[in-house]
Amino acid sequence: MDEKEQLIARIAVAQRGLGRVFGAARWNPLMSLNLTIRQLKVLLTLVQRGSSSGHELTQEMGVSLATVTGVVDRLAAQGLVVRREDPADRRVRRLEPTEKATKLVTSIMDAGNAQYRELLSRLEVEELQALDRVVHRLAELAAEQSPAAD
Image 1 (cartoon, one colour):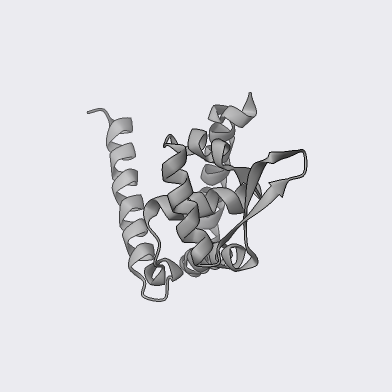
Image 2: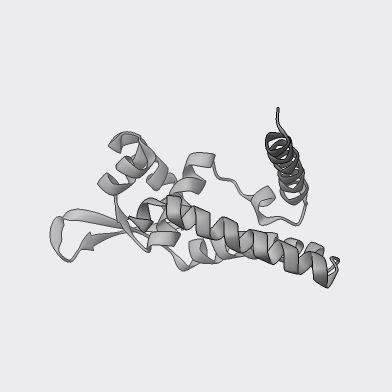
């Protein structure tokens, strides 16, 4: 393994370690959720998009409409998703996150950001400047790779 590959491997191990620390925090809202991974994926997708049809979710998640319907039923029972008629096509039901869902997703994101910011505050200015350059470069590379960039 050459030096570049060794560095990539070390960085990946360190990032997994950070993920374990962030994920294991008892105050993390993820730890108190009563959602499956699939339900959480649907919820995150809906909060990001604002709304979606069941058909769009089946394509996004690569599952059947029956699976999406079951997941959405359970999310709706928890007050996290509502179904609405599509104003452009009355045959289509739009799925929308509730305010409760949006607050939940925001709290998950904010909790991780707060812990990350606390760690960053312990770095020296020079370390933060180097990290800033690297993170912005990674964001550029990710944007180039993203289907949205096409």
